[in-house]
Length: 457
Image (cartoon, rainbow, N blue to C red; front, side):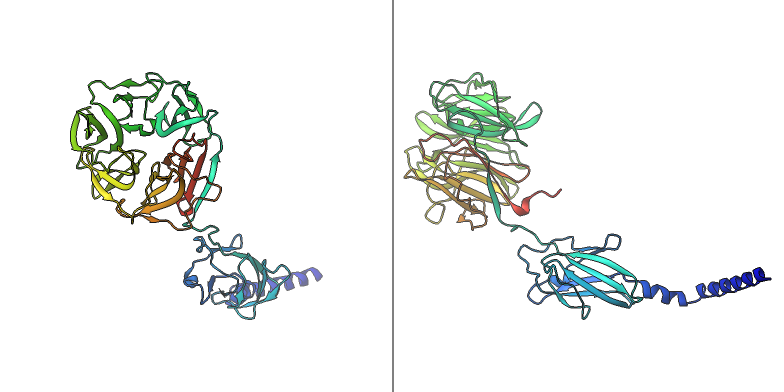
C-alpha cells in the first residue's frame, strides 16, 4: 500500500511538471537565467565616428572586440559604453577595467563612461541573481602611425671587402631573384668583383666569378637591365653585355657608347629602348637601341644635361612608359638639379629645373614609392653629403621636402651614390653610398617602409 502511494504521488508530480513544460511559463524560466549581451557600442563627442565602429561579440569565448582597428592615437580613456540585451532583463552588470586594477563596480546604467585604454571585464548577472556570464571587451587601436616610415640598418657589413664603387641590381640567378652587387674594390690592384644575395635575405652575400671585363675603366654605376640582359659602358666607348650577369663581352658593331641613361619599358603604344649617349664625331648625341640591337640616333645632348651621377627610374603615365633622370653632373662638370624624361631614349624633355626644385646634387637615389617619386640624399656641389628626402606627386615636374614622418633617422649617415631598390614587401633598400664624392663606399644596407604598406598576411 505504501509503495502504491509513492507511485501515485510521483505520477502526479510528473503530470504537473509535464503540464508546466508545455505551458508558456518556460519562457519566464529562460528569461531569468539569460544574461547574454546582444549589442555593444562606444561613443564620445570628441572621437568622431566612434559610434559607428562595429564590435564583434563572441558568445562562445566571451570576447568583444573591433576587427578594424581605430586610427593611431585615438583616445578612449573615458567613453560612453552602451550595452544591449534585447528584450531581456538582467540583474546587473559588474565592470572591472584593467586600467584600474583594483576597481570593480556595477554600472549605474547601461550607458556609463568607462576607461577602455586597457581591456575591460564585464560580468553580467542574470535576473535570477545566480547565473552569470563573463565578457572581456578590448578596443583595438593602430599602435603605429600609418603614414610614418620606419628606417633601420639591416646590415652593417654586407661583404668583407673595402669598396670604391658599387652597383646593386635585382637579377634572376639559378631560377630565383637575387641581388647582384658589382664592386670596384678600394684596392686598386684588384679587379671588379661580383657578390649576390637572395632578395629575401639580403644580409647573406656570397661571391661569384666575373669574366670578360677589363680590370678598370668601367662605369659600373650605370649598369642597366634591358631585354633580359645587363649592359655596362666603358670609359673608352665600349659597351659590355651579359645575359647571366657573370660572363661579359663587348657588343659588336655598337657606336661609341659613353654613358647609359637607363631603359624604357615596352608599352601598349611604344617599343622598348636602351637609352644611351654616344660620342658621334666628337659630339655627344642621344642614341637608343631596340631589342634587335638596332641603333637610332637622336638629338644632340644639351650642355645642361647630366651624364654622370644622376638618379633614374622607370614609370608609366597616360598609357605610355617613361624613363626619368634627376640631378647629376654635366659633361662640363656642373652639378645640376634638373629632371628629364624620355619615351624612346633618343629624345628628351626637360621636366623641372630652378630654385623651386630640389637643390643641386649628384648621386641622389630616386625611387617610385607609395604612388609618388622619392629623391633621397646625394652630394651637393660643395662635396657635402645630404640626407634630405624630396617627393613629387606629378611625375617629377615639381618637388617638395617630405614631412617628419618619412625622414631618415639621426643615426643614418648622410650619403650619395647608393643603390636603391624597392622590393615586393614595400621595403626601400639603400645599399652602400659615399659620404663624399671621392670616399670609399659605406658597407651598409638600410631599409625603410611606411607602416600602412606592410603586407597583410
